[in-house]
Image (spheres, rainbow, N blue to C red):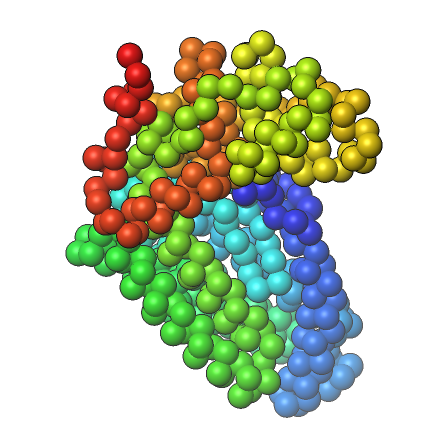
Length: 383
Ligand SMILES: [Zn+2]
C-alpha cells in the first residue's frame, strides 16, 4: 500500500513520517470557531463579565483545537513507541479529521503485545485528560476563567477520546484488545472474525445513534469502523493462508516471454492467448521486465506492427520460487503493475499475478486442504 493520498508530511518521529491529512486543515478553523461559540456561552453561564474574559474567544478556540490534535498525536505516538519496542514496524502516522491512524505494517507477533500496544493509546488519552483537568483545578480561581475553561475542555475531550477508543469496535483500539484476548483461545483467524463481527455490530449502533442525533461525525466513524473491520478480517485470512505457501506452489510455470524485438501487435496476440493482463518480456530468453496489455492498447492500432516491445517494457519485481507468498504479496502491493517474475538462477521459471492468488485462495476455501501439502513446482518438473 502506498502512502495515504491527500496528506503531507509535517515531521518525523524515529524515522517514521508524521503526516497531516488535508481534511484536518479544513476542520481546524471550523473547530476553533465552534469552540469560540461554546466558550462565550460558558462564560455567560459562569456569569463571567465579558471584560474579564481574556483574549478573543476564537483564539482560545484555536488553542483548544491545537491542544486536542497534539493530544491525538501523543495517543498515536504511544501506540508507535510500544509497537517498535515489541518488534513491530510502522510505516507512517497520519492525523485525520476523526483522530489518528498509525499504519503498522508489521504487527507484534505475540498477542499479549498486541493487547498492550492497543491499550497504551487510550491510557495516554485518559492520563492526558487527568493532567489537563488537574492543571485547570490548580489555577487560581479569580481572573483565570479563560485558561481554566480551555484546559477543562481539552481535558474532557481527552477523557472522551480515551473512553471512546476502548469501545470494542474493531479495528478501533478496544476491538484490538478484544482480539488479542481471544487469540489464545481461538487462533488468529477466528479471533479476528469474532472481533470484526463485534466491530460491525458497534458500527451499526454508531450509525443508528449518529442518524438519530444528527451527528455526522458518528456516522462517518461508523463507516470507517465497518469497512476497516471487513478489510482487516480479510487480510488476516489471506495472511494465514499465504504465509504457509511458497511462490512455486501458486505461480503459473512459464519459461518464455515475449521477446523485446517482437512487434507490439505480436505481443498483443500473445497476451490475448495467455488470457492474462501482461506477460514477461525477455531478451534472448533473459527476463528483462513486463509488457502490459494496457500499454500496448494505448498505441494506435496502425503503429503496433511497426513498434517493438522494447519501448514498452516495464521494470519487473522479482521473487524466487522458494519465497513465502505473503512476502511476494507485499512486494506486489508496492509494484505498478502488480505482477511478479519468478526467477531461478537468473532464468524465468514462472509468473505470479492476481489470478494466480485468487485461484489459490478459491482452491483453499473450497477444499479446506492443508496448503503445505500442495505440490511444489520442483517435484513436478520433468527431469
Ligand atoms: Zn489508538
